Length: 173
Image (cartoon, rainbow, N blue to C red):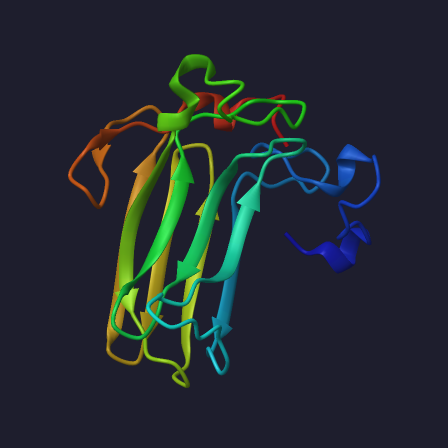
């Protein structure tokens, strides 16, 4: 997606056209990729706690639950990708007052590569009609995962999880 070509990069207004659909008529594309080359130079240092630095994420339009959140938790831990199997529309939250459809169990994680601070590395989040491709990479190689909509796979804890095909629905931007 080339935001400069459409001049619609911001989602701060009420125009749904600032977001993209998987099969997107505004951009005439069916594959969307977010990639970044980065280096963690500074991060929170709290005694007894691992740092938590969100380096990238993808949300649906008016959906509080992130589809993908890429989290760096220190030099000695794999980059963790936190995902949600399902979601609510209209920015409805899942909390103690609203544990509908076991939404408190939607969140899961997968692990990618491990990267030290002050070292260049990159991530890729690619979303298409089949699912989500996730990868991290540095000079030593690539760690990648393909997660397809509606197909069970194992998360980092060995649990079987399935991304709802609703994420790829024609009404979800």
